[in-house]
Image (cartoon, rainbow, N blue to C red; front, side):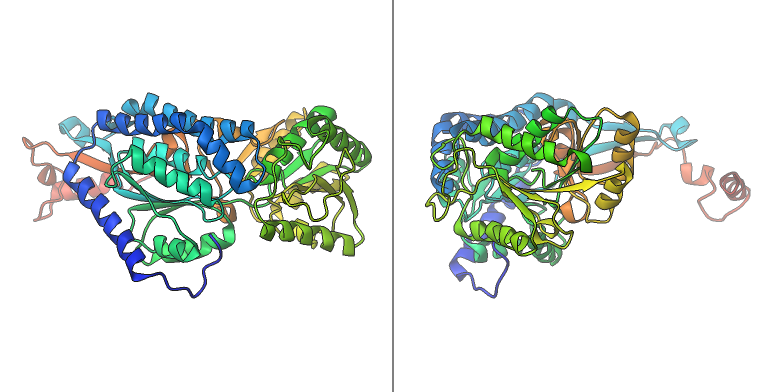
Length: 486
């Protein structure tokens, strides 16, 4: 979504959203307990829709981006979504079971029993971004459906062809009382985030998340915010440098860096700087011998973001920083209709440069140097907590310091981005990079209400026995004496 403005949504559109929410909530309440069979059926229908429409999804993404590789589309948006849905389908029978908890002594000896029941929250709103517009709908949907909820989806207006296809797929696979889609521009998004959902998940920019959270607060809607930030990469002196740079550049050029988890900047030993630049140049040349007409290299989503990224480069040039375009075929990118930008290194930028203050979200990569490893920890901790942090090296003490002395949503050791592919690990940020998490069991819990259930025995008057029943007396004093001590 664009930044909220003083816009007015048509009464008809707002009424339709309210009616859709009312329909889902009433259907959910009428259904009562959502059985395992129903949950599996809904997940199966989502999987079937993705399998059936896989090629159409890739074509739609390519049309919206002007150039986005089929291989990337299939691996990330299609297979990635199916993988999340299958994981939930496989494990949710176990997740749905009541979780036994210890009961306080002596109530446990008198027949008291404690458990947690995981209950669906109800209707969940999904606000999806444009960079992975299909997976950022269906991956949250995996947790939402496995937990027994209904869902309303607001896809991005920046990918209109894909958003229309998502709406068509959902309408074909689900009754509107189960899952439905709302399409439209920023004014629709603003009204959508103001609906009284039972939970909402937003994936997007930190600046927009503040407005989303403010809208949700009016109805006390709990939110999961999946944001971004400047995810740092620390290259140790102990790292296998060729391997490290190859993996970094793969992560940086995948989807042209338009990934919330993309490496945002490098911190490298000062004596390794020239070698890092050479290896980055070599790595990009091997992956993309050409760029402009290469279908494997993704375009920047639209002119607005091209201008934003160009602005970072202009700011760096004005400051006199060294800029290294990684352009293997020496192609002319000026005015290209696809909106492609070559991978570009910005060497030792000021900390006040735009490329070091704002999330890149594109194929630009600032590189700063350090003398002592502790400088890297200090630099990371002096900035807002990122969604991810990456360490390359074989030094156990450094790795431990990196993991324990910095705070980020997640960490990868000797790779980038790959932790999001681990379905059994929670995915999410902290502070400015996000709030809450999902994926796997944690996703099931995020979209469930953990209801505490205590069963009190009827054969024993526990209140009287514990001295809680007036008039207070000897039993009361005994209870107090036992509780007020070390």
